[in-house]
Length: 613
Image 1 (cartoon, helix red, strand yellow):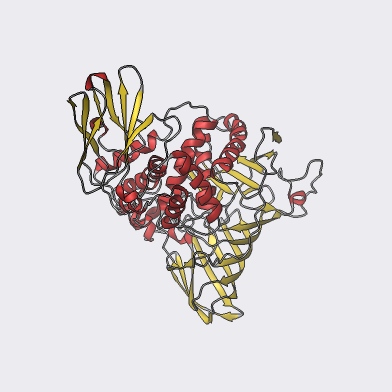
Image 2 (tube, rainbow, N blue to C red):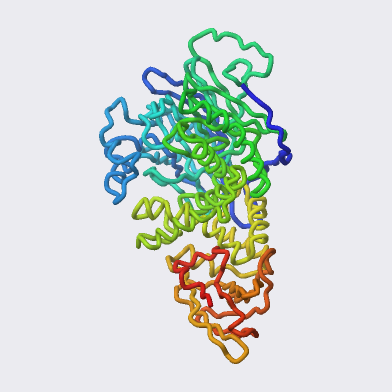
């Protein structure tokens, strides 16, 4: 069934995807063009496929080797994911020791054979979840090579993200299912073994044909090319779909300019469509039941609203479809789609949908290397989720980011914090990774609004998306955008908040009368310097503010709308631990003095930020 979403939305921008190498940054990007055909046996949970990949080496380097990810090999006893899950101090409850107990028909595997490069046989060595390939001839700079292979796999029981027969009864969550070429960029190859965390892919066009039992409905990445032959809710209105002549159907999908391809499949899926006025079709796939039907029907209202809001505030969603698919082990983002568990309350269902949808901006279109910079994906996604949920769920909270701040403060108090610059696979604990990537990453962006002004930060976010979409930006690229938008120097902010675990703690040390004036002494207790917004509230109800930007900012933010009148600006050098100010008002007229009443500065000891008289 389908219905039309009537609220006005932004028109869909048509992006022209040209060369992925660009001159203004001095960086390059590789490109891929996948053609795959796969046949799934739903009785054995095994599949066979072929892959033809045209690889564009846009780098200045001659490549003698390439690497493929074989993610399903992680789901075998003794794999790196198995060992890490059993030995980390705080195991993921979804994994634990489950992999170590898998039987031969429950494990996952993905094997490659008959690999050829430009028609010549290549030497390949399977090392866990990575296939190491020695090329029969090098791939020269600014040239293309055609890599062809056959592969066979077995879908593991549902443990982490991918798998079959989930707790909610979904047959197949097919993510990380095919041999995926590793990315090569200015830092070299990124052939990270799969131990359970983040991914990094190459943009390109996917042409995928999936043959499966005719009773199964498929939803996921890409545009279905043969909807009127397939049916299953994809057919055009009024079309009578012919009965299949055999026991299977072959689904043909195309996905332009994506860096991954996911599909879910189940014979019980209900497929609902919502056509937005801007031409985007939103697909929902779920298994009907007492725990799903009512809330998934309501979800059809919220997914388009979320796309509309995010497109306005973070950059226009560039594709013509998005699929919300019941499956997986919680919520996980993929190109043009997501897998989410579906037996949830409505707020929980909307919340996980919104979070995974928000990844379409930071994981899908900007696609920072989230193995190296997970906080730039998970954190910015959490930031966008907080704002979107506050809007579409009408929560009316004064601070939608409060939960992110609590998560960060809890991490600091735990003593487990590691720098945001830590590679996602190398955090010592799952807690440190989660709180850093999700909570501190969101705090980074909300606090950026404190440093440069919320309106400037918001303009910077849109500029960041528009200038860096489909280019794999890093933290320096983001900082430079915010510097250009604000006119301020911000490298100190990155160096402290990303590369260290130094914390912010400012205090009002003393406020005393000085004749008819008031003398206020501020103290930097924490090791991380920040600009200070100091607000004075008088007994008559009026307010004034004093602004103390850091000298190393080389400027100051503009007065923000809705904030108390700024009566004085004075720069503060970070080496000075104290700063004394004199206010031309009698102490007896003052009701309170407070550092950052907006609570955007992540001050770990807020109790010393305010004095009252």
